[in-house]
Amino acid sequence: MGVQLKTVGEIFSETWELYKERSIPILLVGLITICLVFLFFFLTSLAALFFQGGVSSFVEAVQTKQFAPSAIAAVVTGFLGFLVLLVWGQAATLAISVDESMSVPEALKAGWSYFFPLGWVGSLYLGILFSGLTLFIVPGLVLGLSMAFCFYALIEDDYTGMDAIVASHVYVRGHWWNTFLKLFLVFLLSFSLGVVPVVGQLLSFVFTPFFLLYMVTVYRDLREASDAIPFQTSKRWVWWCMAVFGTLLPLLAILGAAVTLVPQLPRVLEEIQQGKVPGIELPHLDGFDFSGQGGKKRMRTPPRLTRLPSVEGFWIWHDPAGDTKNPLLDIREVAAKGENGILYFRITMASFFDAYFKTVKDADYYPLISLYLDIDVDRRTGGRVITASERSGYDFALNVLLGSENASKKHIVKVTLYQMDSDHQKSLGDLAPQSVIVSGRTLSLQIPAARFGVHSEDMMRMCFLEYGQQQGSGLAKDKLIPLK
Image 1 (cartoon, rainbow, N blue to C red):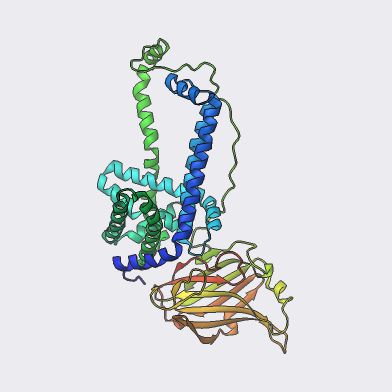
Image 2: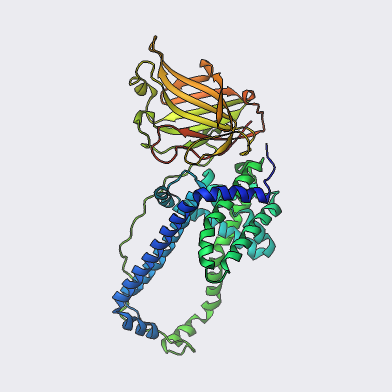
């Protein structure tokens, strides 16, 4: 069930509300990453000067093109480190822009987790863009816009690799001109601020969080307005072909140049040996040693981002281990799906439920989790989740309590359905016992979709709140669940 796209005014208004709450953390992450990038660049530059023998020796080396091998190694290290820190900074800034509950330290840590996935998605995006620009200018520009949200699909919805590229394309498809207008306006505003005399650079820096949050808002609006399911596209092979072709273009250019020069190679080598290459002053290479390996810092492999949907059609959230006050109530995974008119929810724990129930006292209840459902996929209607992020637009909530009955000392799982409106929740009663199944580490819920007023072919937005979580607000990312 798609919804109407928001107007430009609504997008700007929603972005402004986010900007007032999130601009400071985003700016802090940006400042920290920029400072680290330039600090690393400064230190490697000092190292290059030191290994070359000082400023005067470095200036002489530039003129004579005779550099010390250690100075060359320092420059190469500085360049590679600059690229690594630059990608990490971009990943950290995107992560804190997308996740409203993320703190500055968590964003800096998440930047390393997203380093390789972001690099992979970026290489695919550039490959497809180069292919489009090489074949025709206009198709390249069209593809560049339609796939520009791939990085937000990666961080917001855990789409990896080509899934992120296709998700962006599918969401923009049918709304290209609408999206172009919205992005053109914010780019125009950003450019206008940048050319203001004296303070233009400062205004551009302060505007950066607004631009990022604006992109997030447009992406979410496109996703909620789309009836399509990205992973079911049948044209994935086309994007792979374009990505491979665009990636190979530089190699093909080098190969073409090599094929052209091969017949002339003996003559060129002879002229080089005689110093007869016109207009080129050749450096002396005596004493250079390019065989040194140098120390390499091995980067920790980031956690694997799961492709959605996963097993048996469930859409899955993975929750970090060891982030709760009570280790016996540590949620590892939450999954949801709609099938044959039934909504299925599955909560998987790190420990067996029996281990926790053994610690429960008489008439002692503890909130485990709340599932929040947005049935009409409209953030402007429904209630709010009062957390650090205060997300809104949810129509129903399922609250799960663990405890025991005082008289029978029977361990029970109590699941109550609430209807949400503004900041209030109205109880609609507990789920029937046969709808709640506890087995080992897993808690399963089964509820007729008609009870929520939804039907097959609809979509619903969902998230959950883990009550015992010590990090962040405990509120998970929103995901759109297709109903079948």
